[in-house]
Image 1 (cartoon, helix red, strand yellow):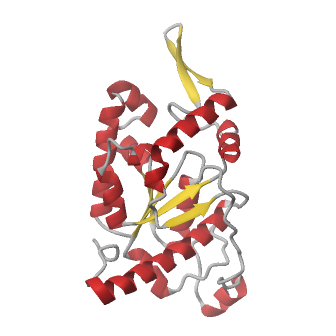
Image 2 (tube, rainbow, N blue to C red):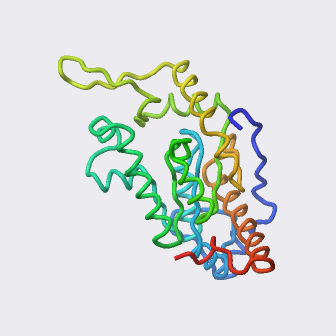
Image 3 (cartoon, rainbow, N blue to C red):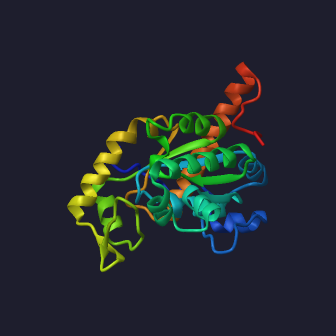
Length: 256
């Protein structure tokens, strides 16, 4: 929920200390300091699934996604970056050139290809991915990934966006033409707040279908990544057991 209370993350419960990890001979990638012990068996689980992150801008999808990828040995993919690599220009400029409908068609195609072409990926999605006029995306994510809804309080999101220089089209800045030159004009906190509420109202029902929900208030990215990783493991094990017992193999796992 946009102004829900933060979900408590206990950094100790269920996790192993650094000393235990060293004693076990297991390690995390360089630059990652965490209390979560990822065993070889669990790495195989992450190797055979995809994770999609959904939620409003400012909830930390990119930052947390990269932390989770480093923690689990998965690869981080961002749908905006996929578009930029495909067209050879920043998303904002591409949208200005072709319009949002054409941008969304390309983004949807790249998301589908990414999900269906293999596993082992953490995918940060654009907020509009689940808009009502893009109905196929939600089903594709639900069938081919563990979907995680990251959320924060509205005040937290406004503060993050106002203190971040990242250009977020239609949210953080307006683009004005001054003497033939495009100039980015920072929006006011009130404008950012109004736009966040507008986006939340259009998208939250789809986001809340995610089986995994995690607040990003009051925690650093590493803590959020650890807690979310633990939640994903629980979810995958639970759904795999149910599928094996009642329905045969679960498509979520090994869908490469």
